[in-house]
Image (tube, rainbow over all chains, first blue to last red; front, top):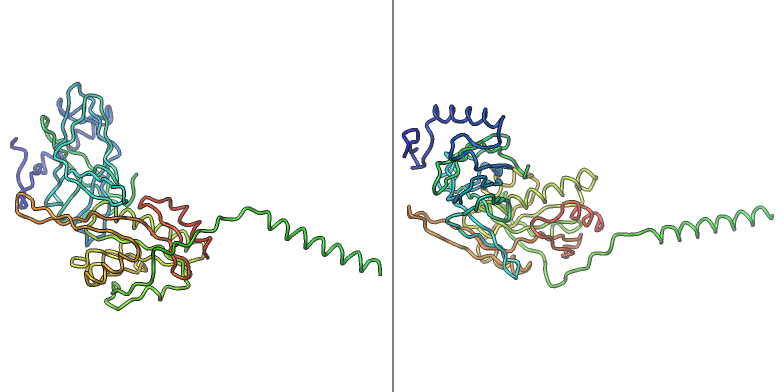
Length: 165
Length: 198
């Protein structure tokens, strides 16, 4: 593990704030000239339409949504995400049976072929955030670090909204 | 006397024309009554008081079953239903309409939890909880199916979600089910349908 990460009290890996701030500023600057991220391996994984659902303060769960595009020439595999306001994060998919019953299923990974784009949206695949330790308030932005199989985490600031942007 | 007779004829013609014109106007299709679903349910509201939904007779209602630990569909659906209700209130139908949320997770969704949860959307939503048996009977009336889906993670923590049906029910002033919408149902459609029942 690179030394600019540490584990918080819940065991969740998190960037040190100074490093994170620098990375965020650097990413923000680069975002002005490109929609991609900041490191060589990250810069071709594109995130757009990102948001976290604003939920009541009493809630213990919420979800994050985004569109992920693989601009690299190799497959990338999304494994999940890390946040500092939930104790557990999983990728989930939603399905509906013939009787109109909806259920969620934990998915271990989400592979994206070169050039492929996938949208994580309400009612479909989403990043499920369990055990909220600090419920994000509507109007805030929160850091969500996506974890990949062969690439370092890709962190973005997600706005907290009641409805899709 | 001719002017009296002519005036009367003209008046009759105007009335006939008005009736014909009104009759030819397109009107919203009458929503069918679904007599297989629905009925009054008695549960406990978010203030801890016994609540029979028959008390809402006279109001057009949007009713929805869900649970507060639901991360995706339930808050999205509540937000949509609340938006539809806001539109109805803005059109002056606040006193004639109501929104009801029934939990099927009474173990975690106590009256107090429901109260704090619903305040985020609209404190005037009627939130209902009860015993597991009461909830089961209420769900049966509306054909709502829910199945707990528990898993234990590597830290030994139990996560309980539900597989569930997620329709929104439109009830008329007599509490009869008039239409079902999917959880991502069109807000404008709900508003117009509700208005057609007022």
